[in-house]
Amino acid sequence: MIWDFFQNQVLGMKWLNELIGQLLLSLGLDTASPVGGSLQFFLYDVIKITVLLWTLIFIISYIQSFYPPERSKKIMGRFHGIWANCIAALLGTVTPFCSCSSIPLFIGFTSAGLPLGVTFSFLISSPMVDLGSLVLLMSIFGAKVAVAYVVVGLIVAVIGGTLIEKMHMEMYVEEFIRKASSIDLESPTLSQKDRLEYAKDQVVSTFKKVFPYIIIGVGIGAIIHNWIPESMVEKVLGENNQFGVILATLIGVPMYADIFGTIPIAEALLGKGAMLGTVLSFMMAVTTLSLPSLIMLRKAVKPRLLGVFVAICTVGIIIVGYLFNVFHNLFI
Image (cartoon, rainbow, N blue to C red; front, side):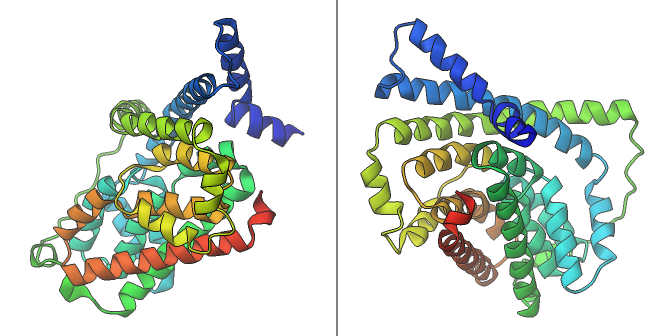
């Protein structure tokens, strides 16, 4: 009962949804109607995600202040083989919130001489899996789905990086990165005040970048939740469509958003009858393989390596989606 209260009322803020519903009813809006229901969904999700976002960014940024790029590089450099990929994937959970902001770190790690597969494990896990996504997913889908999502995300990152390492594709990294000189600079020791100031600055800068996508994502979610017939969603993304996972993945690839913008859409789709694995595949594709991030990555790697990266991630995401659909009843 304590856990249910924490998940529903603290993380999920169900009390906020009821409060907004009562407020709209007092203003004469019927929350059972499409207009009233959309407004309730929009206000509730924007406020909830904003509050969680501020809190999570502050906490994660404070943790991140202990792991600057040069320290992360040294940590990853101590491990070899698949263990190095595991550490890189785990370090990706405390780094930037979207694929575009992860790529400069990926380039820095590659220039510093870290194995290519290790840096790709980092690049895959960083936007797909982070501490913020764990908490947000828990607030909406529950602990089992959140933990499972993070675990399979880390597995995809480790396997993807390991495959790229085994293929020996170092020659397909752009020459200016391979020949870049690496200079080890020790980070200045930060005081407690410096770390708190850094975390506060990260809250402001990150929120400015992601808030437009939250608005767009919640807006789309509100439309799906209250205007699109359930039968339509079930037909396209439900259990009767065997190609729903593939379709959701392909739709997600050209889009650009982070985990905070995709969760409201996923929430609405799941509520309308979409299969869990199909929804999670959409989220993974959006956060990991967005078109802007691929354009940025193309500046660092040649088309063949870029194609291998996209293919490995796409196949991994599709497999994860079908596995979740097979075991759908265990999570919902």
